[in-house]
Image (cartoon, rainbow, N blue to C red; front, side, top):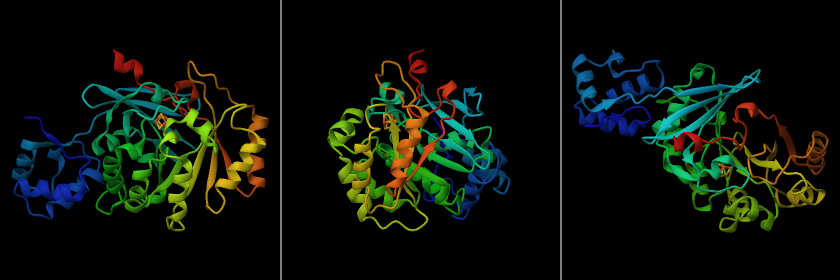
Length: 341
Ligand code: SF4
């Protein structure tokens, strides 16, 4: 019989576990404490549970932690980890250390259905949704786990296309019985799936990032097929009508493609469509993917684009490219090779 994984279960699910094995209800919080607060790797180490209880637990459950299979290290200190998921599929996770913070970029799916034309993950197609166990294991099993200060759901996959598991993982990260993180340390990035966006906004207090990349319908449709059915105009309407608290941030990701979305016309239209929304734009350099006709504008043009947005009253920053040499930068994550072997 395959054992169930304890790691990745919410408190309600752990209460059900306790009930199933004949433990008192309060044991669920003790188990949560071992899973999410202490650095153990096996149920046998849960020493405030009786030996008998640990034995019963071990009959049906395992911790469910899995070490990364491979590590790549960039010259800029970024690391990329390969994890095995979904019985034979693979995902990548990036760890990005900076002077005053260390961010982990987690994957929420193996591959992706969204087909954004500038993204290697999009090119490999979809292999499956990760469980909350597989999402959080990327964090817990990272060798740098204790250094992590921030988490972004910007790795492989579209988080709102796997919303239930993403919400379970956020619940574990931000609850007092879980990791107890402030939601302001976590950002979830989406292409904007209309029928899930409200649910995400209502059920979580984490920051929202929307992949924008063009303010024009036709142009965005060519870059991101999602625009054909879920327009950015409708996404902005949802954002406009939602009551964000002061701590919660909305940002828009904007990969700059030379000669495509980097003109004064784009600046004007961005200022128009974002009018009235308290937000910022993260300008991202395009990292070439094989077979793509896009290129990145030079540093001067990129800075000029940022300054033009700032002059229109939009806070815009240029995101530093990290881990390009190990294909860990934005748009480069792919496990196509491993899936084939
Ligand atoms: S950019 Fe994000 S949503 Fe688009 S294909 Fe890549 S992983 Fe999927």
